[in-house]
Length: 248
Image 1 (cartoon, rainbow, N blue to C red):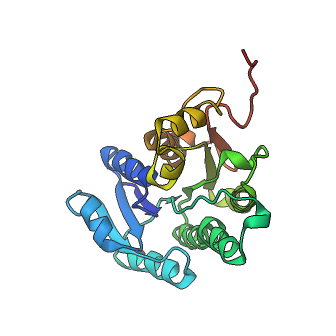
Image 2: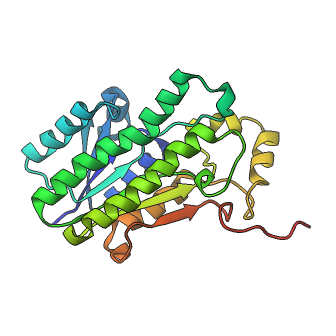
């Protein structure tokens, strides 16, 4: 049976690479996002990709999207949550509105999407796999990342607890934690050669991620190749989180 992967935030650079990997592997994809015109431009002519309009920060919209997919007779085997934002600012200069937005986009939307997937996977009774996105800034203190680090640390805690809850259902839940990735969402940090070089030097394996590198890890975590992994955080960060090489 062809696997079906539900990708939330299908317009993101990482999601685009992930969806292409899924299509190349013969999988069906539910490309979900808030702007169907954008999704139609990206995937309207791609066989095996089905577009669904959904507001990721609205739990009723998320639930309705999953219900609509199931009503069409599709079994959802995997879930990838690619919705996210970046805020780099010290907490003392972060407004209530900014905090609310960071938490809504980067934590609550994940809870809504994962909850809907888990309900459906349990109802199907055939297991499944989910992959969420965190950041390398949760594992080591990075200046001016207070809000986003707090939200993404919540994602990691969510994944581990949910993985424990649903291991008996053969539902796996894992996380990728990328470093800075060359994508539109991070364009403010890479808009000049000088800024790009400065960012690259922050990583033991100098450079920044490509969206494809992150997507490849996500695709593997959704596949049978990672069937013995759950509750894991896979660091795609050039060693930023775990090592400190000698400075030469």
